Amino acid sequence: MEAQNNADNGKTTAIVSYITIIGWLIAYFAMHQSKKTSLGSFHLRQTLLLFICAIVYQIVITVITMAVPAIGMILSLVGLVFLVLWIMGLIAAINGEEKPMPLIGAKAQEIFKSI
Image (cartoon, rainbow, N blue to C red; front, side, top):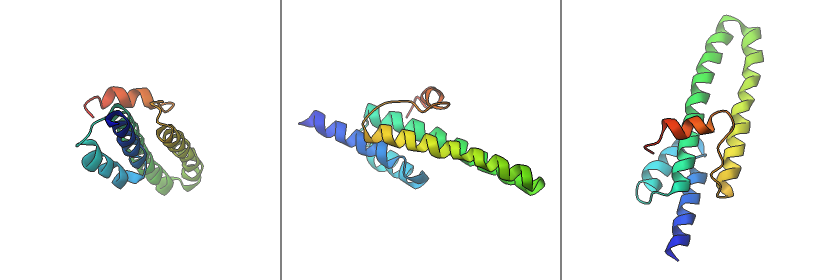
């Protein structure tokens, strides 16, 4: 019975981590710190790098848009990649899978080993 509870807690942590940065903070501090699981750690790493990349990308696009509006608007469409990665990660979390996101998944596991 205890193993089932740990799997559920890891899955809940994984799913909550995808719900904005506030969800990530709740998942990390309120859920993950008390009961660390492999699944929870995996998805916390994935979402942390995804959120960091998305924020940096948005800052760059904002600066480019202010300088050259036409190019900035076109480049902002590339931001849909982050939405696709987020959806793929969320689906993996819902299914309880440790499936890395394309492009950033392996790097996230490497950079944030301590989570």
